[in-house]
Length: 493
Image (cartoon, rainbow, N blue to C red; front, side, top):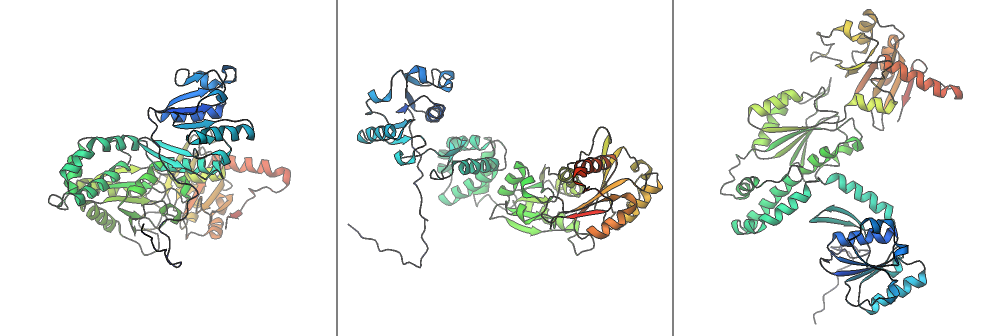
């Protein structure tokens, strides 16, 4: 017998203490015992059957849950109480017991027969526990809180579900079919490269195809991987700032990226969701500040993609709304680089949500219009049809219009909009630093003076804004503190 020396106290343990040992138990074709006919027992029986077990349910027919009767034929029903059962021969025993005395008796019978036992909702009589699961079989993820907080386990499961594409199930099955071929064709080092490339493709959300195998084999072989295999670029909308407003597809793209080129306005909370190994490069462009040139961003994306990298171009809001996505897409496609787009929540939609304002309230606004508030030369764009914009039945949202707010107001008033037209300004929409100002068009410059224009600013004008202001004032009138008084400023700081 060999005695191993204990680690010194100042050395960190390789594995932190575990409340329980996670195991995956193969019960295909094995008999398992389920005692009781409640909904809880039915759920455990369904779970066991899904894992391939032959489920024997012991319970008088009069006490069976409807869940059991709806799945008639899926289980073997015994119209008797479990007390008359011989436990020998069962791989597992699961009991739904009404009292602690019954639970102790069930537990002791199973232990005496050498059968692992679980008494539902009574941890002290459980040798094993059922956790929350994420099912992408043959990929199965189990989550346990050691019985302390089942609701927390369910919440963790929901979070993991959002990170794993449904196609992962197909990729895992695909891996089973090609594993022997990959093992024969590649050396151990090459196999690791192959499976790393395989995983990147799996988490990109696409479906597997046998046509992918030659490319993956080529990328894994140093003799054939000459650096000319093209990568891929994904334009991803980061939304207005709140990480919880990201789409599931956006999170998956961030998790699969080799390199992330992100805008100055992308929040740190969004970047926290990216793959830890991914290289991050700030390529921000801000008015009045030192910025990356668009030509340099295009060249960087192209160089990385040509080096075989999976690149994410992370843009604030939606990449297809005032994000110069068209220029980037054209540049990459001319060079033969594949591009796809993951939309994001644009700032105007987030603003409407924060305010509880319908941009197209059918009683006030029959259309919505997004307009850039400045041209590449810094002033108002020269080709705006201001007579068309000054339509009270359209909700108009100006992006990046902080520095030109006074000009916007004067042009709209000159084209016929009433100076008293309700207007709202919002900065840092959806973030903890969010600010808003409510007032009239004639006082727009005053509002910008209070909000400032160092951070992203939106200006909304039109009938829908008036409708929202009226509704909120009406709600608050009972408290004698109308929140939409002219020139009212709010900050979340």
